[in-house]
Amino acid sequence: MITKSLDILTTVYGFEKFRPLQQEIISNVLKGKDTLALLPTGGGKSVCYQIPGIQLPGICIVISPLVALIKDQVDQLKKKNIKAVGITGGISYQELDDVLDNCIYGNYDFLYLSPERLQQALVKERILKMNVNLIAIDEAHCISEWGHDFRPAYRQIITLKELHPKVPIIAVTATATKAVQNDIKTVLELDNALVFQSSYERSNIHYQIKNTGDKREALRHFYTVQRGSSITYVRSRKNAVAFTLDLQHDQITAGFYHGGLSNKMRSNTAQSWMNNKLQVMVATNAFGMGIDKPDVRSVVHMQLPDSIESYYQETGRAGRDGQESIACFIYNQNDIEHAYNQFVKSQPTADDLKFIYRKLSNYLRIALGEGEEQTYSLSFAKFCATYQLNGMQAYSALNTLDRFSVISLSQGYHRRCSVSFRESSTRILSFTHNKPEVNAIIQAILRSYGSSKNHVLQINTALIATRSNTSEEEVINTLQLLHDQDLIEAGITHTDLQITYLTPRDDDRTINRFSRELERQNALKHHKLKSLVQLVTNTTTCINRMLLEYFDEKTLLDCGNCSNCSQVVSRISSEEILIALHKRPLNAQEICQELKKDKDVVITLLKSLLEQGKVILTSHNKYKINE
Image 1 (spheres, rainbow, N blue to C red):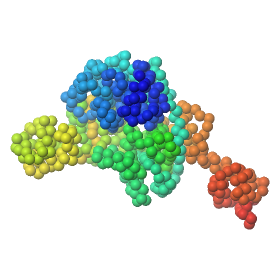
Image 2: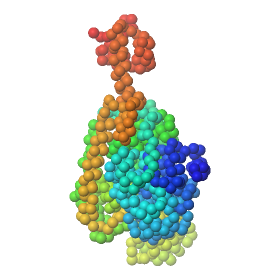
Image 3: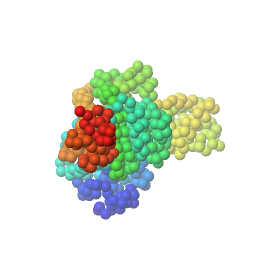
Image 4: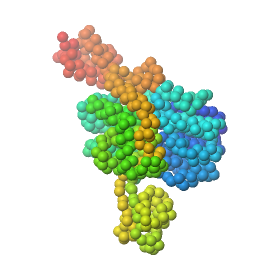
């Protein structure tokens, strides 16, 4: 069977051979056995379940935590002519019904779901009727309450095993400590699962940590030396723009990427970077998921992520081709304080969540007991301004509501369009008779929403663009044209968030269900950030060794390449020079020969010793101890 898998790898994915552990993992899955696969970022985790999903008869169900990940993988499979579909927020009951029917009768290979979808009776009912060949859990660390991105809905995935008890499960992740691994196996009941784990060591990545008072100058200097493709990670949209402008000012080709940009702008910027038209992508952590660019030579962090797991995943986007690469961390004390404010102090209490949840529901005009499975567009800035909310705390609260499956939060630039008809559909269609694209758009609106003059219709411009085979821009222009002709009343507003209510509004009782778990998770976030700060501020221990030990992987050797190892080497070499000079004065060449050291290293150290006044230069150009 593995011969067929290799053929799929070649013909569908374009690779001639498997990456480490992929073949063993796929073989185990094809034998119908449960599997836990721990592969590094860029290690090809998705291939481990996609190839069996293609190869085996039936459909593979993939559980994934992020809408962006689902969309990316579905799009990639479709480009390979593989039948795949993803169910994300914002679709009607009828559309959900149609998608699930297609999965039963339409010969689909993959169905991607968020874990929250498994709580819907319709979804469970239809999955029971599907010919499921494999259950794949992506980002499986989200199952564990000890993980860095715990999502309670992941604990309910066991429902799939109850529906299809004989179907094998594969759980994949890049980062999982021993405690997290054990939790995954327990929750998924993987009692006899084989565990495939690659080393967390990335010998081709050289870790550098720099504490500096001038971060902008440090970043500029870094890119004057490092010329290859790079990602610079920041923690805010404002900083993404600011650091990009700084780099552009220094003639470094750079672009910025964050969740508030339009889909078109994000896509264009990402493509320019992928094609090496931009050297540097300055981005929030919205960038990177699903990006597989093998020639990224460096990843720079300008602010602290929330955990070592996040740091490890983000740095792992460098050097996927196996070539030497750099992970550079530029920080100062203010960044540490900011991280505590962002990740610890801003974590909402149960009372905070109740307050934000009520304000959100009131702002969106959702009555008690209503809102379930409804999607709403939200301008976050206007929402905060309306109630004079602290932006960081409000956003943290929305993310927490998302994590605990109260809402589904989707970042991205959207246009919200409300339309009411002033004229009959016949009159409007006659106006567009000689305008084929305009006519197609109006036909799509009429088929999707009707033409009642008594209702204000909320138009999904992306949906209409798809159904009319046009673009969102053309849909917006058409609505504006009809508005100008007094045929419709169109209101077009811009939003940066979409929120889907996963449960009916129930105010305090909604939050009370998970208030204790919230308290425990807040304490865990504090612990994880503290571990990251210890990693960053430790200047004496090998960085690579600290990372490995965090993930329970022991090593006796220092990497010799990180900034901490380099400092130790320099310090030892300085002492060796002083010991040699205690015997007699020596010139630089004689020191190199006696210590068997590189000349450039020796010259650098001698300059430092001269500046410190520990040695002096004699009239014969020899160095001696300054006594």
